[in-house]
Length: 205
Ligand SMILES: [Zn+2]
Image (cartoon, rainbow, N blue to C red):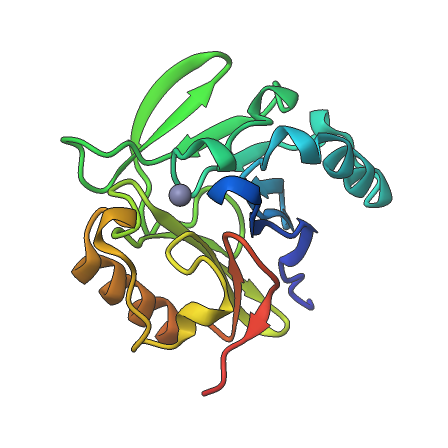
């Protein structure tokens, strides 16, 4: 029997743009994984709500068909549309005292699990810890026909961060050393990367 691989589709490309008065306009990437379940990674900004619904419609899906949501981390720009998906189980890693553990909001209740590196969430899906940008940061590794796609959230905000010489401002990341270690780890694993705020790109090996 031919194994059916997971499919990955970017529904919304996140962006970062500077407005007048040094204000930043920010929205996050929203990614659909079709495997044995319908899984969404991050839920983006309010302004992208209609776009998410429209893009799901093209896949013959509604928000109610999304069974699982994985939040790469708990910054607002990645979770604003969470309430659209009220039938989903929501997975995220809270920072604080529970290393390696994830939380699952199931039927409105919180459950706590150890899910890092575990594929039980969906076929061909692995969650890895990639701290640095924030302490609760995780990335999602998906096995596809085109190799491993890593949905990196802000572990790798956009393609510019492939350049390991490029260093973040200390005030903008939780831990610069961890941020750099996490980037390296993702670049080693990934054939393709979907960043938190930009286009999917191929990793040159
Ligand atoms: Zn963030």
